[in-house]
Image 1 (cartoon, rainbow, N blue to C red):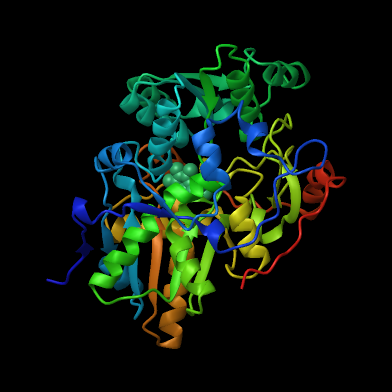
Image 2: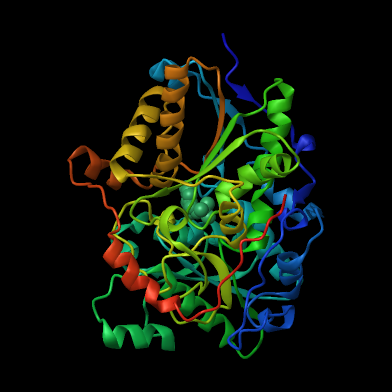
Length: 458
Ligand SMILES: *Cc1c(COP(=O)(O)O)cnc(C)c1O
């Protein structure tokens, strides 16, 4: 029997997160007046303890005991050798993945939902608001809030609210209140509904609603929570890569290639940043974030200053952006349909330290089905994008006759996304590519903003 899984004990779980801000230079977020925003500007939206993490440049940040004591419901996550996928591809490459699909909501997202709920709780906050696309983030935050006794209100993008009932059921089971967005509960929602009564909604709109609902609570006991993009989210997700490093060390392996799908950038960053640190310090390693061709933020969008939401409530963030007014094609990887990208991921791409890739929806499902029929595990539509890149690299290794070591993030399982697989099998899914005309049209919304610089970190 060949060894398939490398496990860590709970005692071996990392006790600190790795902060990439210690090792790279960043453009600051800007306020409406064009000046950098300070911690106080963010205090109506986030609790100060999380704002401190957002701006910290300490390389290592302790994970609180009370957070470890919830993360260990499913962590440490196994490192799995994809032996059966290797056989199916007849590749000399050795393929490993971190299985983040074993958390209660089924993805990597509770790695940050849990600490975010905890820090809000100890800051005295009683209620969190958030947005969700396909429902993965909403269910992760609902789970985390239930662990710490917080109320949770979720604005869910309308089209997913109508099409994906089971994530709503999960949120309800964990005690959260989920409403379709745009809603009549906020000015941002009412303004959109007045202009476009039949809009399918977007993440940008739902974020505006969730921020507005948090800031509007005059008791001061509500804050907003974001599931990707921000520095503190990337920080919390590094537990994935830190565990992976320990696990690979145990078997004497080190990856040549690290791969993660990228929506807002957090599961990719979580696996990749500890390796980015090695790369900055001279290691030779290829690091690929993978996005859909329908929402090509890193591969085609401009590195710009843009808002994170449609109503422009957020500061201007230095990131690759398709424009805060962007409404993506209806691909089934709901978690990969955001117009922007984490500023740290954007900065690393602009510097050439990581090399973005894009894949089509059908290639993604083909790789997902191959994985289900070899490894057995059914991947989330988002994860399929990482898998399409893994398959490409494994085939390349075969052509070149090289024993490459490929490590990727299995960001979540697809058991609540089976409707999308049904559509794939009945040929109802198609490839989408954003046309240059459409792209140019959305870009006009940030053309008057200041421009971030490409800094060099190493
Ligand atoms: C949300 C989600 C993603 C994309 O979000 P990132 O912040 O880019 O990681 C990827 N995979 C799964 C399973 C998701 O739920």
